[in-house]
Length: 119
Picture 1 (tube, rainbow, N blue to C red):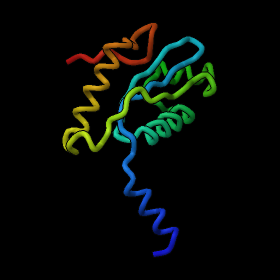
Picture 2 (picture 1 turned 45 degrees about the horizontal axis):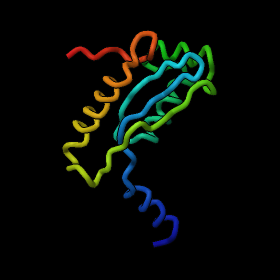
Picture 3 (picture 1 turned 90 degrees about the vertical axis):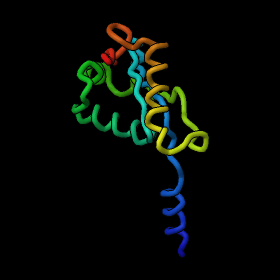
């Protein structure tokens, strides 16, 4: 196998970081909390949608348009170590992690861009 194919295969076999992330507006200090099975992919998707003015969170989109991309930072709050949990439990575990961060940070109304989950 040539070197390029080896690198491509190694990339495909490398697990992506999973966990909870925060997008923070450094001007008004509002935050958005989310979770993902692929944190780098989620950051890229959010940036792409915001730059394309097509993000589903309208308040976040409005502030992105107003303040620009340089006003925002993307941070990983907590990661899930894939070797510590069985594959079928990842989504549930990440959802619980996200709920814990939402409860701790309360990113609603004037503090953030999340909407309160009604269960």
